[in-house]
Amino acid sequence: NFVALVRAGYPIDVPKYFGDAYNTLMTEMDEADPYASLAEIKASLSVELTNEEFRLLIAWREAIGVD
Image 1 (cartoon, rainbow, N blue to C red):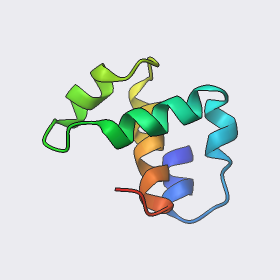
Image 2: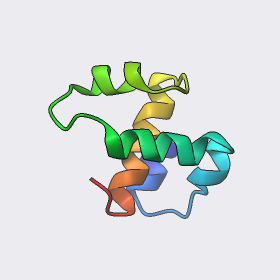
Image 3: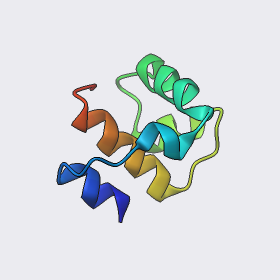
Image 4: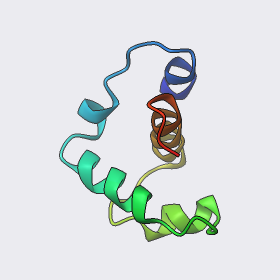
């Protein structure tokens, strides 16, 4: 489970996992409405993610200090 590994501090290469979509996803997450629910944010992304991938992206952002 990548999410648990990221939260535990293991060096998972999340940008490599998402590939070319990484920068787009990070930008869209930065620009997301801070009052939107996680479901609304996930639905607004231009890249379709599974729930597990979305949780991984959130865990990664927390791990690198991006709210």
